[in-house]
Image (cartoon, rainbow, N blue to C red; front, top):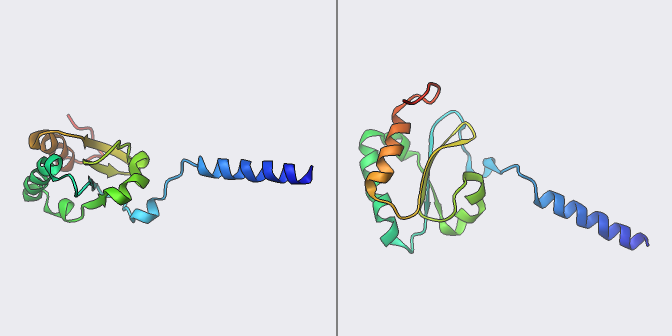
Length: 131
């Protein structure tokens, strides 16, 4: 009977620790006071990512610092962060600011569909409302 209660207690602890919603931001070394661009990339799928690469090149012209500091998560590392950033799969690009995804583009989209929302967020002070 002691063995059974030990197994139940150990199982309970294992299940509750695996359901913890606290994310490991420290692994990513995010500065929560700056707008962080995060790009989820599957380098084996260049065809679907081409608009993202083109958009990143265009965004770099107006937002060089933000794009230089962009964090790229490759497909093999991305799975760990899908839930944290509310991303379903690669490719995706987003801006993370103060523990919140403020803009996200995911899936097969055009270059313009990436640039427009990203530029709007990167250009504005997020402490005030964007109109």
